Length: 328
Image 1 (cartoon, helix red, strand yellow):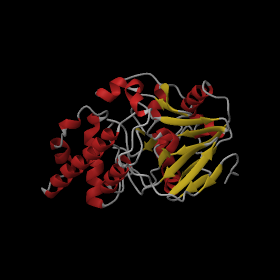
Image 2 (image 1 turned 30 degrees about the vertical axis):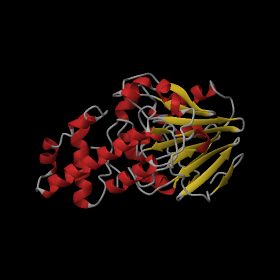
Image 3 (image 1 turned 180 degrees about the vertical axis):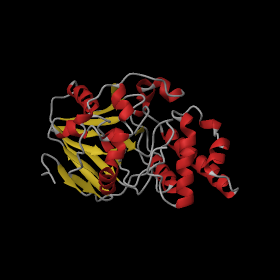
Image 4 (image 1 turned 45 degrees about the horizontal axis):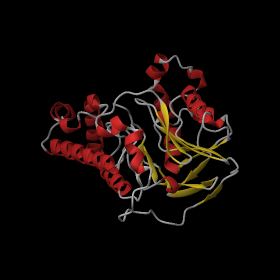
């Protein structure tokens, strides 16, 4: 494990702060300016961009790919998720350098999907110490080759050098909670149990009244169930997250979101779960389910066209008790 430098790191002693009629911060009132179209309707393709959502906190949004976040302080930078290739990570690093020239101190990996951590080598080369929840590190080891393989078309499409890919694992892991301090700012890493993935990590930035949800939430972007151990737990996690006393929610994909978006996402998962359970109870096989389950109320979600694959994955989970562990 790498030596921890520059940051004061301690297991948090306090519990989650849940909403109790707290007033919205000044940044919540700016949400419409940050993402006017995305907040009013379905996601619209837009180029990669960096948006400042609060003092020292910046959101990297690349519509159609994965999100990242970075905290830039006088003592250094913390990056959350690193994209799906070192070249993508270097692009992110270039955008960070437009904000600050301070060293990259830490990288946090929120979950074990390759489009959120295959860029790790670029940030490791900058001297960053990488952190994840314990189960996320284990999943990265187990499924690294699969995550690389399923992105071959992406690498070919953008002429990305696959020889740059290497498994760069977290140096530091935690179980349920870890609090990081940098430049007078605090980041609370929270594991509420399995959600979309066994080791899902939420990151709360108290000064910014912002919650980064990583894997369990993607604004109006259909879910991936390949590693999901329990959809019921996932739904509960989302509702706990929505109850937190924050104003700004950001997921692993999609633009800046609201509390209502997170609750809608929980409802989408609940509706999908009920539909698949009902079909199984009627004796339908996975193809019969895929032919009949439509959930048109969510047809505006990105990746809705992959509904058949999501049905296969959830059918597998409910009939075997095990995640599909492959992307349908």
